[in-house]
Image 1: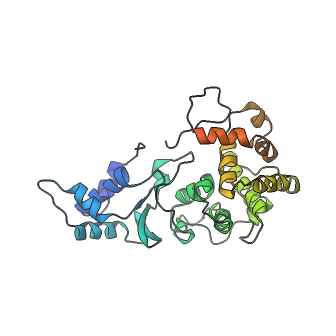
Image 2: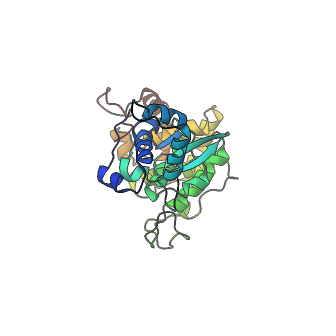
Length: 286
């Protein structure tokens, strides 16, 4: 299990019942995946917390989870996927500082739940880890890209959540930031949007793009049978390559496409592309 961070002082100052606090610790250290999500399992938690002196009922644990999910800014947010209930930590990234792509083991929350997460956690899912948030359809990938354009706008009122309207003077803002491709756009255009979003998340500014040329390269990848999800994953991995040539070329999309197979191999092996140390693994959490 990946190392987790817990600020004990803050936790013990929360107005939770003792059982809610125990359930919180179990969710944090045992239940949640590396993106702060987990299936809602009150029976499993009740069994884990049972000892010779304490035997919480499933009903009591469910009430404790409801307590953690209550309030205007709850600790956990509940959502459903395929008839099953899940939980996600609202401020996961504020404390855990996940900086590299990690694979979720729980169903990802719907877009409407993203708007309830803290700014940093939303950015984790929408921008830095868009690759892990791409669902099986291009439409869903586009929906995430639209959410990205909203999430990069910071509030000025000190509250969590996206601003009501993106500021017009956002620094280094380009057309891909202001007008993300809609779900109806063709796959190559959505991939261009995904490259832009991943590049900006990784390097802090927008890439120089040649949509016509790069779009044709992406179309060829799609025509070769590679899925949208696969292309997004490889490109995101390539943006963190240690290959000096790619770095000198500014991680241009055309170069990432030319080196697609090599980057894909590194991704599948779980190593950093271009690293001189072949054993250097691509970190998953910090």
